[in-house]
Length: 583
Ligand code: ATP
Image (cartoon, rainbow, N blue to C red):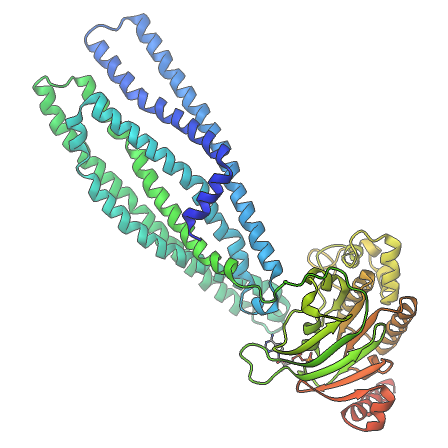
């Protein structure tokens, strides 16, 4: 979509605001062009001794009235128009955010957070300016230009108007050249600002790591370099914008010289009055605004176009996971993977290869295997964050893709390896699992996740703020708050992705016992636990060992111990390790 069609569509939808602004602007322009004519007539009246004292005061009062009307109308159009232009910013940001929310991990892997933030702020601001300031200045400038030219040619003297316009084509040529440079400079400036944003975002997220590695100085130096590059790029854009001014100045000076030359000749030969020449010269001065407006509009439009060119690919990027399913209810049932294979883009070795398994409603599945074996990927397949290139995944008799994404996501609770807590109270963080949950339900979930006692020890208990501007929880506490959140969601399928790795074995046992209790209370609920620690899955109905994306062993704990493969050797090793730790 081009900038003109984007703004055109927006103006059509918000035409009352634009129309009323345009009317007020037309009023401003009419009042403005009236002033020199009035002053010219007054001068001629005074020179010919036609203007008496009473009339002079009256005309001065009229001039003052015109000035007041111009002021009121200017405030009016600004209020109407900018309210509308800000609305375009809101609409674009809402669309942008909705698109980002619908995208899957594959999309985010190709994007940088700081860049996305710059697009949502700086770039959309530039488009907003093109829809507000540029539209207005364009309309105002054109209207003033037409009216001033018309009155110069028809109301004063057409010969003067013709000669005054001679230098203007040269100015148009200069404007055209300058605007193409502004487009390039603006694109560069927006990109460099985005790179600066990236650096700030990454450094702030990793500030502890930077400090631990003693890299603050290096990071500060990089920031300084990026800031200087962003400033240089902005300066280049500003320099090109500044080039409009001399072009306007030169054109108007040339027009002034030509006008005075011809005007002087006409006055000399009594074909023009001094008052008319004064009016004409004042009108020439009134052309300064339309000329500057043209330069300003061109630079705002080029900035807007550069911003839209950066934003458009994000709007157009296909959703990395489609949402064409139509089934909106999901009764807990059997989960079945049949010959599922999946490779990440650009990877030669598949992350999952010919995986088949079946889990009855209410059962618990343990997923184990060495690091990089494909455990998290299998959970991502169930969450539909990635789509397998081969095989089929069914849940309760329907292909996963037949459900709407919203249905699927509300039927699954997922605790990822890196649990994220929002900058809010602990109670609010847990309640995200089921917005509107009562305090007693939040506390019950916290109890089930073995975090209730820890929370009571925090300064303000459940009202303690965590994350930014709040206290920092330990890795194990964060994991348990995230588990409490997912237990509160009360979903048909609970996915724990190494979510007990940071808790001690005693706490792990308590949480697993609570999960077992919940299973007895809600028989249809299934759980999948991916873990490096085998004690977390030993009680599962089915344990699957993944190695290099393939299932190499499966069965109950006892069966796998009897098989004496990878699981059995890992079990012995981890048991020995635990008993050594206990010494
Ligand atoms: P761990 O126990 O260390 O968490 P895992 O068994 O969960 O490992 P996965 O995270 O599923 O393993 O990764 C399986 C394979 O896919 C690995 O080789 C990994 O490098 C690769 N992989 C994972 N995520 C991506 C990604 N987004 N893009 C490309 N390759 C990926």
